[in-house]
Length: 135
Image (cartoon, rainbow, N blue to C red; front, side, top):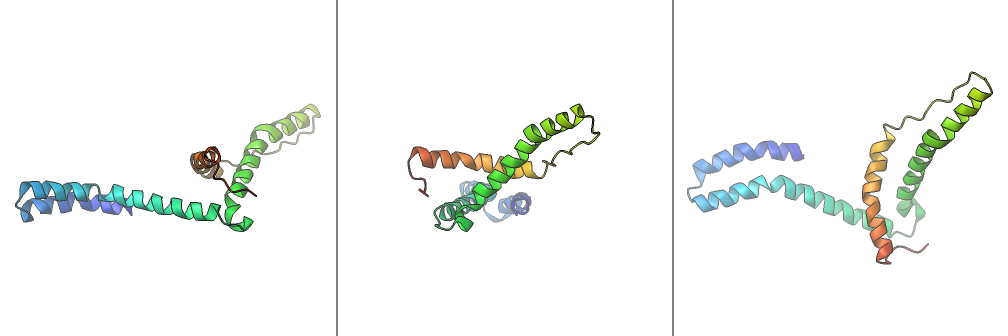
């Protein structure tokens, strides 16, 4: 959606030169059109933050608890890849079993984890301001 709006900005701004005679008004309109995509993206992010706040305040674990559950799944995946599996493989190698436990594919999980870590700062702010939900 953002790329669609961005691709329309140039042609619409070019039309303004032909349609609007007042230079100040033309520049004001061109600026409004040029910043339209960023404003739209900002509004989408603000709306998602409001949804996130409502979910976090919900009394049901199935509504408010899905983010922590995904966080723990990511944590277990990381722990498996960087702690458990290497030690298991080392032990299997010392026992000369010839068995190797494969690593967990993290390339699908990492964008989820990075997104959650970016949003994790909000949880810290909640705790500092003492507005977090008490279980």
